[in-house]
Picture (cartoon, rainbow, N blue to C red):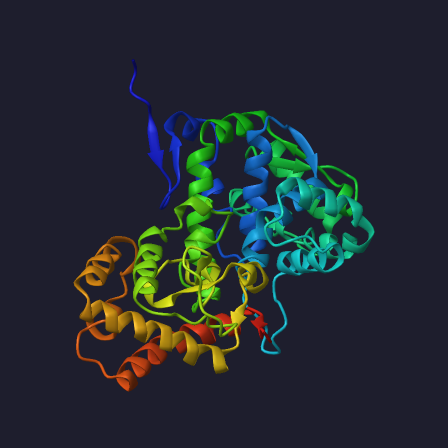
Length: 393
């Protein structure tokens, strides 16, 4: 079998070498260069996904719909700001505004499926039209700017009609472009994918999507500096990755020895009839650290969802239960063994091992360490837009 000819273009983008002889791969590698807004990444990602499905012709409307679906989960479930916020706290990115507008008028849940999102877009087409049209203003044209360098002429960015004609001229006379555009206007404007580029993208879809995700994560992390685990917040995650079994066994051991009061109801937690849940939502912290977990009434878990409990009085109640657990860890050999079983999946924070769970802390010291480390994370989630849950039971 002949060895596959591969060439690497920039970090994370590996393209079969045969295409470098026929296509401007360097120009393609510039398609995400110097973005002003995040939706430039989503534009290229949507095009790659559409091409991977064997589609050779589409329009702006279909691509924008794909972009909204792809951004939905990050914006709604994880409160990610695609391009940060303006000084007046208004959303900068047009794609994020489109997602939020659809959420407002459709009442779709944060974990809505792609089919549900596309159905809602179709149902609310009129209300979304202005938001969607704004996304077509520049990115479809500027995404091709890396190819224009070979032409050398001055590009007139002020006229969609002249840009469309210029793209056609470059494609015909200078270099084969990934796509050209039709004569229709706004959302109806046609996109024609060039067959040679379709073949290249289909042959290299995994590598190209990985490259886009890498560049997208860099952009998003820069615009959401306080958000942990951002790389995991681009698409729905399998709930099976949650690792709470050992923590549950630990709390079962505590309940065999002592009464534990529910943080929110004040009632005694009933053994084997509770949920282990996160004080600061999992969707923000993206981990199952012991210091953020608590037993709570199963009937309230869905009501709390991914909202933040009101800090006062719930944090002090949460800290009391954590201190109860801490005491038994150092008093009972059986509980300490259950605690050690949590090391692999639930105890990665250096401060927790070195400070919080070390032997000898007084109640005041334990509370202080827990608050010092949890409150900044809580405050970051609040600033990111997580809603406060003020349970009144």
